[in-house]
Amino acid sequence: MGAQSQSISAVQLLFPMGKQLAQRIFLETLAAIDVRHAMLSKLKCQGQVLQAGDIQLPLSRPPRVIAFGKAACRMAAVLGEILSGQVESGLAVGPAEPAKRLPRFRYFVGGHPDPNADSFAAADAALALVSGLSADDTVIFLASGGGSALFEKPLDPAITLGEFLQFNRVLVRCGLPIEQINVLRKHVSAIKGGRLAVRAYPARQLTIYISDVPDHLPSMIASGPTLPDESTAEQACTIAAQHQLATKFPPRIRERFDQGQLEETPKPGDEHFAHSSYLCLLSNRDAVEAARVAAEKLGFISEIDRNVWDIDYQELARANLASLEALARAHPGQPVCLIAGGEVTCPVTGPGLGGRNQAFVLFAAQLIAGQKRVVMSAGTDGRDGNSPTSGAVADGQTVSRAQALGLDPKRYLDESDSYSFFRSLGDTVDIGFTDNNVRDVRIWLDFGM
Image (cartoon, rainbow, N blue to C red):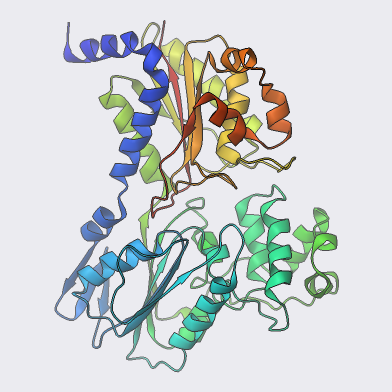
């Protein structure tokens, strides 16, 4: 018997440990997309030049650094290491205090999923930091997911934090894809949609980003403070009208949408981006590929799902399961693993705790009830919706275990309370904040028995 066959047999014998195997694949995925490792492998400082992938950035004087998003503090710390501390000044706004503070940096703890006072203060500080620069100056932006809430300032200075909180809460609970939500955000923000880059012009600018959006939409990361915006004010008004959102906005913001008074964002080709360069550090594709490799190391025949991922969570669960069944049929009697990524849409329908990942697993658990299959879905940032966990894992016995405890999966799903469901079963995926965010990872296992 070959090494591959021996590995497969070992996995078959471990079916009762299927949920633990899925979590092991996820943890190995997180290790493979470590921010520090990615930055050290793609960034080198040689003399007065920073080599960032294929980009050569002259540093005739120490750069200014602005980091925003869930990975902000981690990215700033590693960049400081690469630059040997040679930074003119900087700021970082993330969801928590940094493990270690860098000299000449200001730190802000922004709000997520809703902005807070520090979100506004960080945006004010960033605009001040890049104002009045010359073509001899350099600004390095470190962008990651979550920046849309963590880093914000209304374009209309009369709009209060309370009003903006109401606006943001409508958006994050409406169930629209993130790219549509961010179109709305960009057109009421003083920093999003490229406006921060406009303020930094004519300085040389480099944006190093960790993508939590579809690969073809980098300008949606943190709502794109430093990238030209392809969307338009007209599109923003149309989205709000089509989904009856404007009526839920506070009056001062609703009026701008109703009267079509949104200011346009700077577009591709605008001269303010002439000195701007961009480097993608990590993306969801890196995560799903790492998960595939991790599954194969355990002995699974592994494949990345070919479906569109950014769709309704129930629709994707059915599509994933069909792909898993096809993979299992192609390899009868052998354990297989299907990997998917992206971010499903999942409207909030009740007052409970949870997020799109746990809702996905709760729905999928009902599809695999009684089968020797496992499904797991978790966010790479360590948080899922309004819950304190990153996701959940289920197998073919989850529904029967729940029913024995008097738990009705459908009721918990309807009440958007998937966290309480899985916490009762001990099947949440608890990893804590990761200082990273490359969207979600979904793992499906079939043990071929």
